[in-house]
Amino acid sequence: MINGSTILFYLLAALTLCCGILSISTRQIFRAAIYLLFSLIGVAGLYFWLAYEFIAAVQIVVYVGGIVVLIIFSIFLTQQAGEKLPKQRLDRKIWATLAAFCGFALTLLQVVQHEFPPVIPQAPVTVRGIGEKMLSTGAGGYALPFEIISMLLLAAMVGCIVIALRSKPETK
Amino acid sequence: MMEPGLYHILFISTALFFIGVLGFLTRRNLITMLMSIELILNSVNLNFIAFNKYVWPGKMDGLFFTLFIIAIAAAEAAVAIAIIINLYRSSQSIDVNNAEDLKY
Image 1 (cartoon, each protein chain N blue to C red):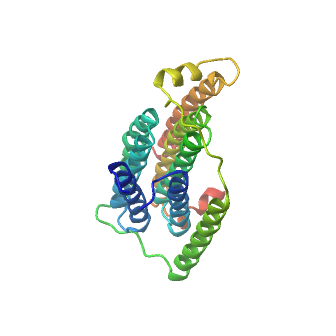
Image 2: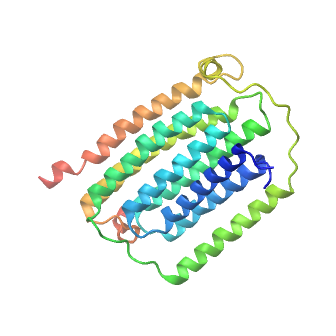
Image 3: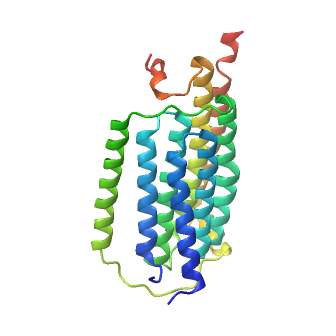
């Protein structure tokens, strides 16, 4: 039986995987960034399909709106327009493909052999529940990781400024 | 066609992970290697969300792990791009084969 939800799932899966493969195989770096963008949008669509709307929104805001834009900016800063990436040696390509395929087959074999327990469907998580759990200091609360992440983001921000500015005085 | 379930999502995340590994092994440009790392992190996030939905539906731990991984990925991408731009300024290239002066 094929219903709309199933078709949507397979479409999103195809979008994610095809754009991922194109993103690592194209020789034009700007196109690679655009394919990565669509692959990340496909993953966000899968989160929507799984009814985790909050994570899907975070994925779109942070990955699509933040990281991919940052990558595109850095491509503009470091790459000549229209320049293609150099071709890789064929033996390296073959060995890498072989290694990735063997790892894929082994992992998939393990996954298929494992029996997961059946689950009782429960009410989907709400944003209110996420917020309460994130800021709770009781058992199973995530207040401490939340604070540590904020310190990490601050440190990363300061570190980026320091690293990106360091070579200025030497060149003058 | 089968009804999609946990195994289908695990298949997608495994495939995405090894697409990222393949890109990491074949690419020699730092920005494209960073893109491969983003693909790998996304596959891990998808795994966490799938397990949270299909194995422990009453809990939210996988969801929080995903949130924190996304935040760390943002910080990591920002620092990596700062390093890449600094490297480009000093050696006019972001190819890993030309980045040997990082050793000294």
